[in-house]
Length: 216
Length: 243
Figure 1 (spheres, each protein chain N blue to C red):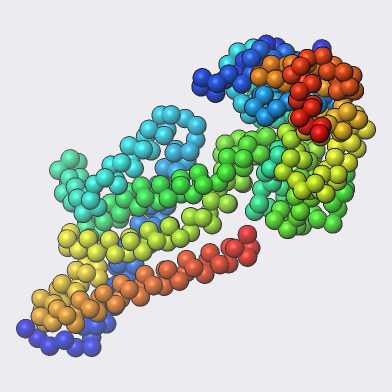
Figure 2 (spheres, each protein chain N blue to C red; figure 1 turned 180 degrees about the vertical axis):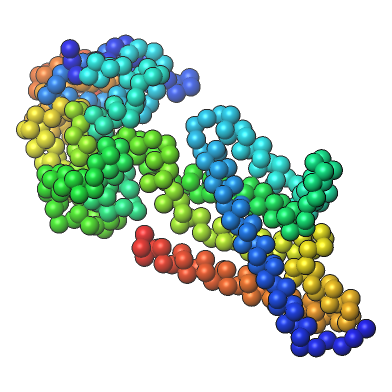
């Protein structure tokens, strides 16, 4: 066992960049999937809706930890290809985020009154044009709090990737604790780092909402 | 051939039959007012004409083209049939000008400067040339409704449908909207309007249709129908609105 030194805290801060990196990549990947899920959910086509609903049920109805393990251990068994912890983590978290973001955005789109669809249909817009010019711009503002709320969840959920041996914030803390056995100091430190990241996101949400209220 | 030909149209919402065999023709340049109690099917009939509501049987033809056929290009049809709603339904995130130019640039693929030119023209027509850059929530109800009319006019429709467009307005704002309609009538626009403004129907409409229980109860020249109702249903309806 050894003592905790200042450098250890800097090392923890550095590990936070993997937490942030994983979160950002999962947000980007999840947003792409989420947009597709949202569109499939609102177009007037029964098979498209069924596919989207099945996807959402699977990824909302199973634990994300299980999804991580299935992808990390399952893909090598099925395909023979090796999956790095990083690849497994970004794929799982993107798929998982896609289900939640898709549902959040579907809810925001459906919160726009039916009369907006009628008015835009009446000047000849197609479904995709209605979404693009009339519905989504209005739904965007409504979706900011729940979307950023989900990002905050995602920041904390990425700690689950530590189980694959992927060294993000939580895994780094476990390693440091094993070496120094100062659990209170180490884990309170990373809890504060998580808190700061999430707090910044929450403030951003409030600012964005305020600004959009002025600019409509 | 009439501009609008409605033949034996039936429409139901589940068990409830709201249109029970309606037939009606509208000629080019004609102004038809539709009156009746709420729930009589008058708004539904109007909304079937631009395909907003599907029908179960019968046919609706506009300009010779069948509206209720699966292969009908509703996008093309709706450029030729304008509709204005009771609750205005402007796009709240867009300025009055963009509300008007959206259909022109996106649907008609018109270059923006040309679309803005048209927006200026139609906004003058409804008397709101100083409100081009205003957002809908900065406008009064009457002004919003006039912008909504301008938005439809910009597409240069051959037929305008008006669905109780003054019913959500404060009484002192109704006049400014009706004046715009009267101007349109003078310009020869073909119009079908569902309305509770009996005075306006009497003075501006050529023909009056009284809907009752999903059927046409009575129809004929506006003044004649209003002055001498033939059916007890219309007499009692007029009695209840013209207190």
